[in-house]
Amino acid sequence: MVARDPAPELRRARRGGHLRTVSHFTNDDTAAAKSAADAYVSAVVGGVDPMYPAPIIDRCSAGKKKCVAKLIDGLLKCHLKYEAKNLPVDPVCLQKVMTKYDGGPIPARGCFARLELKLTCPTTNDSSALGSATSAFVQDTACDVDPYQAVCSLCGNNIAETPPEDCDGTDDAACPGLCDGSCNCP
Image 1 (cartoon, rainbow, N blue to C red):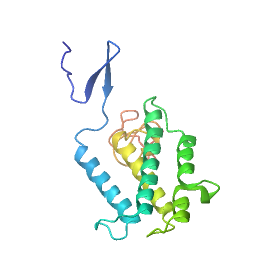
Image 2: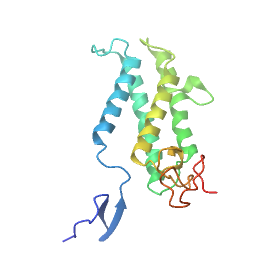
Image 3: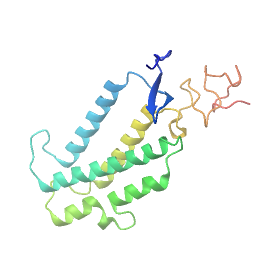
Image 4: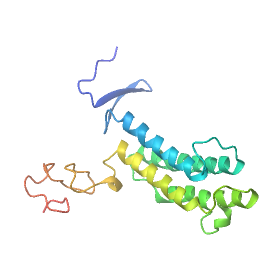
């Protein structure tokens, strides 16, 4: 029988017969994450289906939704791969996923461009906007789950996200009372 965790922010995970303690950076954020995901999905669907929420049966719109689904899946997999190793996300991984989506140096090879070439689409030239919205959503989601990533640091929020911050406002244990405006100790 496994003993109960003494702190709610810790959990024990059973792996290969060994117990491992895992810290949670956030708690009670399911409703907020669901709300953000619902808003994102509504924005994407509304972006490719101009008559949304009326049901639209259109091969191009369906294909564009599939393109965005593959993009979000690939970007999240990049984050998961490196987060699991406690490493910053490799920009090469992210770029490979984006290149599959937008065609990279040859935009005609992009997922939306191929659909717009083959089919009559209710919207056109929307790949860039939806790609940017998807990248931003994935980054925001990753930061919501793990705000201590270097790319998520926000000087002035009273949380020292290290690296790159030594301190942040009232979170100044590294240099009590001496935290400067750029969230570094002198």
